[in-house]
Amino acid sequence: MTLPQYVDYGSLVSVPAPFVSLNTTLHGFWFEADRERLEMLCRKIFHEPSGGAVDVRPISGHLMISWGQIAQVISQTPPFDRYGGVAEPQVAVWLPAARVRQRGDQLVAEHFFMCVPYIWLDNAMSLATGRELFGYPKAWGWLGFPAQDGTGGFTLDAFGLDYGRDELAARHPLLELVPTEALSLQETVFDAPRDVARDVADHLYERDDEGVHVHRGLRFLESVIADLLQRRLPTIFLKQFRSIEDGRGAALQQIVTASCSVTRLRAARLARRHQLTVHDLDSHPVGAELGLESQPTELAYKVEMDFEVGGGEVLWDAAR
Image 1 (tube, rainbow, N blue to C red):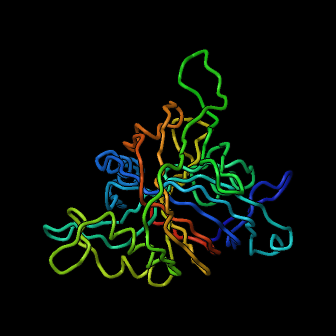
Image 2 (cartoon, rainbow, N blue to C red):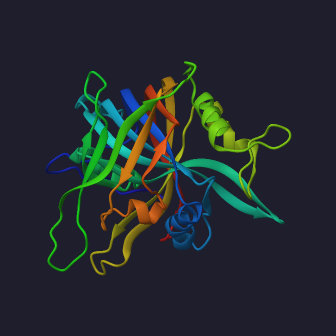
């Protein structure tokens, strides 16, 4: 199918893929959520719109929240590759998931994806491009990071409101993460996504008698880990736009994937526990939708990396 040409006019707020992201520093913290809530969310985002054509399940009841700072994001498509780029601080929720199919009496995980149900930033170009191009559910937020000397914690305030006829959206606290006591850790440095994934799995998932990580109710094919072995981290999204004729309907609705290739990575465990505080806010229902409560965590990483985000694939389209 031949696509119509995208019309660039007025203010530049959206640029095309692929992108290169340089000098990224990411602090990722793993938390326990409610697996049933996560399954309900995946069903709402993928299974129900597609009528079951795309069935995505969380692989556990754990998720990661990251505070990241990307020094430079640059489009690689001419002539945008000569325009410059943006810095992109962001806070994101990462849910490890798999596209599954029923094979006889077994539920088989065929492809691994990271699902990103929440992401906040303070950059208009990244917000518009992420929503329009990929389907990232990007929202506006105020991000707080520790001081240069390492003191202080991580914070997120979001633009939103508690629902009520006379309420007005404004800035509200949503997430706070503060360091507590030190951990006794042997310093280990990881230089590949698969090594970080293996370390996370060793801490979060049980093993069977043969030493293979076990995930309740799922059998994993080799293709699920192939991306990690190739330094790829695929993501999956519900991309949609409201209809102008009926705002409760979608003028465009697709389930899409995007490729992410890690070109440089250095990661290490953080040597301090952290305490997460989750604040209730109706327009950002992190606690209710994810089943995420205020809690401590011992499993956290500091990651320094470069990566490339390429084009994607439409898995399902409501109009086809």
